[in-house]
Length: 202
Image (cartoon, rainbow, N blue to C red; front, side, top):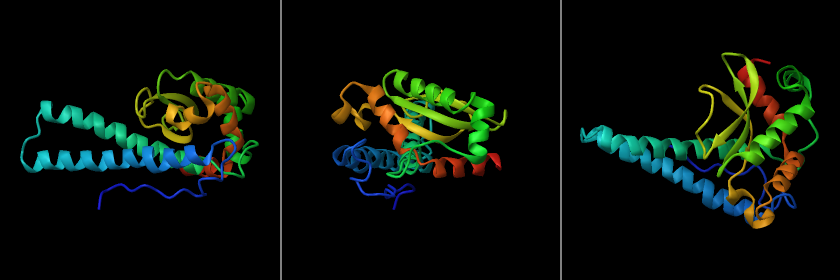
């Protein structure tokens, strides 16, 4: 058994419709996310084999490290993404998370606009992310290219919006902003608030 496993969704494939169709959700979870899990496990095995054979060299390791980071980050972000969404989601946060958004990101509407722009404008494939940055002890919004590029080291994702085409193209074609608008109606703020409390001690 590998190190990583595909998590079950906390809802069925039809639960997020009409914002996300059952066909897209099943394809996204059972095919794309599963591929990142397999890729991370396979790459770990290849790296372990190099160690066992004492064949770790710059030539043999560099590509595998990049492949591992790509697949592991894809697995981590998708695992958060599923929990961030709920058929009963939407509205806006309250409590400590809302206070932190007001303090660090200029209020909910300003934060919503920033995360929307970050998600819709990420070049190629990637994510918009609300994250906790531990050194500054603050919330930040990041653009993630692919799954692992352009992020502040040590930042912890709290709310992630998937902007890869496989997340929306069958339903929204090339109109990514329409898809992102619908994601706001699905945000599970209880999950995001619990993630915030875990890292910020709120």
